[in-house]
Length: 495
Image 1 (tube, rainbow, N blue to C red):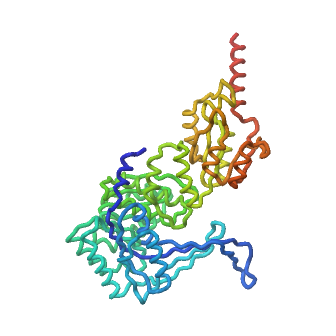
Image 2: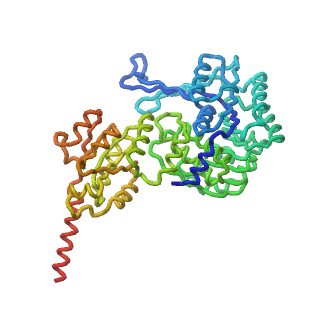
Image 3: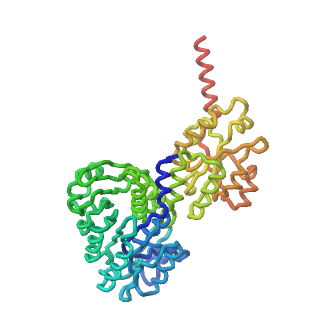
């Protein structure tokens, strides 16, 4: 458990953030595509699900709110049907809509994505993206002037959709002279904020290429280290947090390169909204008196949690960070695991369960577990206790005790969680299956459904059975026998 980072995260609550940026609604339409339209060579999508969520700067507001902050969101929406949905989405999350300005001449920005079997087919963009008019501009400035003296920090989330005009930026500059708030900027273009001398900016690699005029390089980590002077001169930022997806994060203190931070790799991430989660957690960490290194680490945890969720534009809640920081091992109690799995089911994740002794781990185990993980999103491994193995395998087993077996399994990337089982009157994983209710139950290919003691509970909960064949001649018993045979041969040769 990382108590220091956990204590920082728990200080996020009630931080008051003035957020200024572009409101969007992200719509997702999912369906199946099995035919081509007769009137044109285009796919026909049979729609089976629709989903709307906050996008753009509104997603930053959602992240700040979920992390415990009080958000004062200055933005603009149109006077249209979408504005009603916009307000409802804010209200559903408990985000104050008081500072949202309605412009009768604008249309609310909506981005609609249509997908089939996880493949994006097309995206439709609608809404007004031109700069806001003078009257709306003045109303936004009025809202900012009311909030500014009482906020803990200012966050600009500029998606270049018309809200952040030159006049608004100049008004922020004047307010900063009087109140001097911590100011962070996440924008498509950073040069126009140079006058504000922001404390923090978060360009991604593509945005940094635009600022520096450089070309894409294969070794991005080494390339960006020389960019500090140009980035600082063009943006006026005190700290530059440059994100490079899988290549990690580079930190510059003004023009000086300070450090590179690696990030955990994620398979098939849902990247929409990850940057919003990152900047929200980073700013709150800084306000909670974290140093840059700890703030980056917390922000990475937030982004990592967001991109693993099923939602296309995801948010990170404080609970997500707490779970990450509190777990130093994949080994959990059944009560801990049950609570965690319930949340992941709500996010739409498929839960896979398998079990075994895993006494001497061999390549057959490793391949079996990798195939089991491929059956869903989360793999839980039930492992027999030492006493349970003795009852099943004999007094000479296990070779490795429970702690050692857990430590070995903990190192496998295919496994998400480990839980123990086995009592004197029951050495089956039935209790675990009943409590966790996985979507998929995986067993080795030498089992048959007919003789499986778990059959009744699997049928009751509607769990799908998957049999994965074992690799020939790969077993713990076989490994032990080969060791014993070699010992006998060695003794014979020695005599």
